[in-house]
Length: 190
Image 1 (cartoon, rainbow, N blue to C red):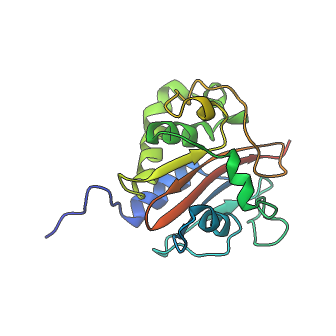
Image 2 (cartoon, rainbow, N blue to C red; image 1 turned 90 degrees about the vertical axis):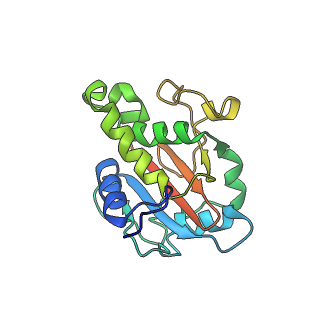
């Protein structure tokens, strides 16, 4: 019986971690890399114009509970390639931390119930989600702290973001590998 490569995970583990970290008002979707410019592939994922290349589920749930579609109700419907200038490189550890912060109001750990007791569990789920993209993946975020320091402690960052949507607040991570692009985003409507 063979073993899985270190950078690969199975669908059940990945899906479980996505369900644990993403709920209403959140967006988690992956698409294949088809172009040299990853931003174009990311745009397709954001606008739900592509399917997960592995056939794994995506989660795109509006804050009021309905699923996002591909039309104007999609939070990323007005995003253009130029908007990715507001996405800053961030370390893998920082990207994992940002995924965790999406659990809190205003995307801050102070607003995550019982964070001290749950930090390891939440971080483990974030690690599983990003492990899918392999050791050579690049990560980007709209959290402004990463603009100055991609290795900053994203649990202790300022609450400033370069908005990608028309929502009051949005924050997330873009994961880019040689074969896939993932969009993991939180959205606040009021």
